[in-house]
Image (cartoon, rainbow, N blue to C red; front, side, top):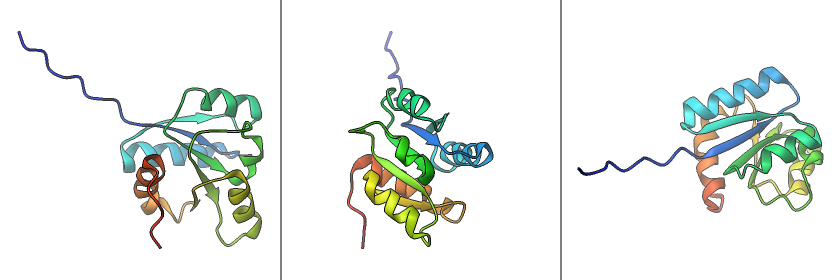
Length: 125
């Protein structure tokens, strides 16, 4: 009897946002628009560290929670904030985020950004 190959599970995304409604919206968008798995983590240092220990492909992190990232975080980051707010841009750059996703305006960009950041592809200019 031939065995059917087991499909690989979709990539995992950790979603971190201080607003539970926004976190749930991001989780839903990751699962429906991108077809990836998503878990919502507590934005505090302990919750964030525990979620990142699972080895997600990408973390979507609210700009306010970027300061709670563990030192030397190897997970590729997409900051979630407002690209018109200099403080959000500075926080994203300081944390080493590979992208800043405006929410909810950037929902259409989410699948492409997840694939690009998880794959390590350079951002097109």
